[in-house]
Every structure is written in structure tokens, then in C-alpha cells.
Amino acid sequence: EASTEFGIREKNNPFLYVVLPEHLRHTELYQQVLTNSEQLVTPHDLYSTLKDILYYQPSARFSDLSFKQFQGDRWGTSFLRQFKSGERRTCKNLPIPFQYCICQYQKEKVTDAKLMQDLGLFASKGLATILSSENVTSNCEKIILGNVTKTLKFVLPHKDGALLEANLYEVTFNVAPPALGTFRILIREQPRGKFEIAAEFDRLDRYGKNGDCMKKDPLRPVCTCKKSS
Image (tube, rainbow, N blue to C red):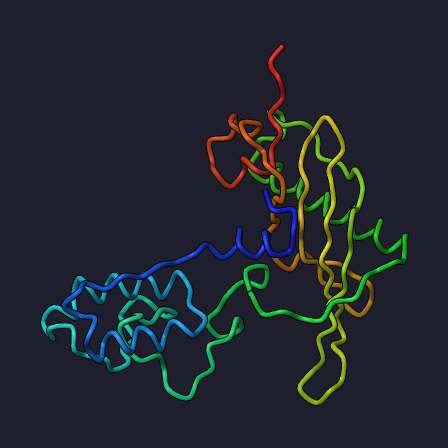
């Protein structure tokens, strides 16, 4: 359950611990891994690392530190090699979805009650659409907005200092009983007031066995299964 900002970041960015075999701990490769540990890394990089260990490093006796882009893995770079020279590893170019990005952007609290309600209604309809698109609504309690607990607006300037034309909001809301759940979602507001979902829904509270009637794992946090009579 993620009830704090730190908890949410920890939930979306699991701890990764890498231990090298003892015979590699006094090598240039070890130093390269230490250097890379100070950079943003993604599951794509972990995949490339495992691929490197299996197919490439053994023939070089784990001494090849040169940057290498593996075939079929556009985004990943092995932890055991130099990362691409001259390219900053940011959430945008790795890429890391916005809700998983650990970069801390300036946010301001939204106090406009109508805007908060409009965002909440749009978010809850978007959540319900996930179930209807999978044709499982008959198995789940109906999703409607309960209340919006918090709405934050991102303050994201352009490179030239001008503000973005589109607004980006982080909306936290509860669904109304008998459905259960506290969710967070990023919503983009275009210049003419049109809303669009900008990321995936994040379930913040525990759902336990409430979604066990769903065969697909991604639907379990969204669906509150109807109780059989």
C-alpha cells in the first residue's frame, strides 16, 4: 500500500541490488558497474545485462566495456558496459513512463472545485473503460467517481522559459462503493480544455483478493469482483 510520496516512488521503482562474483571485484568491469550505478537504469538495461552475460561477455572474459547496442533491444544497455557517450540518461530518452520517473517536478495544488470534479469524472470514466474494453464489466462492480482527494498541477516550462500550452495534472481519487479503490492518474489538458489520459492508472491501496475473478493480472487492481449470491 502506497500512502506516502516516498512509498509511491518505492512502489514504482523496486530496489535493485547487483552483486558481482568475487573474481570480478578488482577489475575495470567492477568500476564500470559502480559508475553506472549512479545513473538512471530501466528493466531494458537489466534485460541487456542478462543478454550480455549469456552471449557476449564470456568470450571476452568479462573485459569488454565498450558500448554495445544489442540486436532487438533498442532501449537497453548492459550494466557491464559504458553507457552511450554524450547522451544524458533521462526519463524522456531512456524512455521511462512519466509515472515511474523519479525526477522531482514542481507541482502546485489545484483548489478549483469544478476543475477537480471534472478531472475526477474523466479519470473514473477512463478507469471504467479499461474493464469495458475487455468485456468484463458484468463481473465487476460499476466504477463511478467517489471523491477526488488531491489534484496537483505540474509546472513544466519550455526550454526557452515559456510555459507549456497543455496542462498536466496528477489526480488522486476514490471510486464509489460497492466498488473499491484509490487510484492516481496523470491527465493532460489540451488548449481547448480537452482531457486525455497521459499514463497508466496506479492503484495506491491494497486490493487483496477483490480482483481474483479476473484472469488477466492487469485487471485485478481495477476490478472489484461482484459477490456471488
